[in-house]
Image (tube, rainbow, N blue to C red; front, side, top):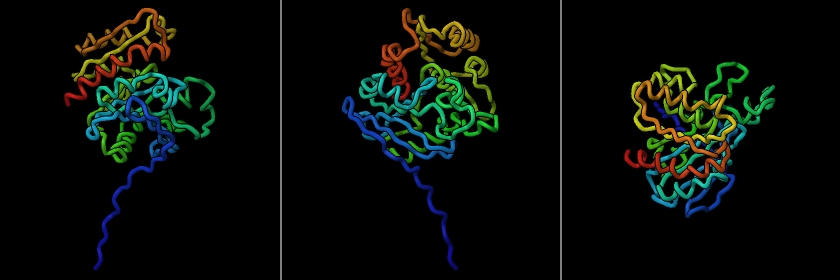
Length: 259
């Protein structure tokens, strides 16, 4: 009589696209085949120079039309990440290369506009960025980077990605299907760490789309800790992001390093 055991699951195959040294750490860019999205996906990761193990992970979610490279190239976040010993991970913003009719007709819908949610329309069934960010990508990281501790993780972002980071942080997938952070915060009984938001007062999207005061009011109603800083003269650009990125990494570091 012979018995066999199932073969162990293999790590997702990663194709290294680039590597550059920065602040004694390394920016790395990879491509892999995503089972969740049904296409090849890229992500960028910054690995600080030390320590060599148990590195906490800070995910960055980018805004509309961005790829995984915008943040890594433009933000200058690596200096603070190196100083705090935190790995930065920047995924792409949507599936690509699927050639779905209408996927590139508008800058705010389809390619480059995944909104970090799971689409419910059959036509857009591959747009499952929430599952990719929350489930698949952390496993890809833990399977391939032994120095990372993906259980010590935090998340932040800008524009579409800032809202996506809030919903990923607040969302309970077993109970809620909403993707509006202001609605979600009203349902959360306890927020474990303060939320830090910087908002440029000269942002063209402030008045009609971003509405941070609505979120502030919802946080106040449920006693959720929020630090909302309105920044005079700043707009929606990476100049704004680069100005305040060190504060945000330090904010996350104080909680990541305490776990």
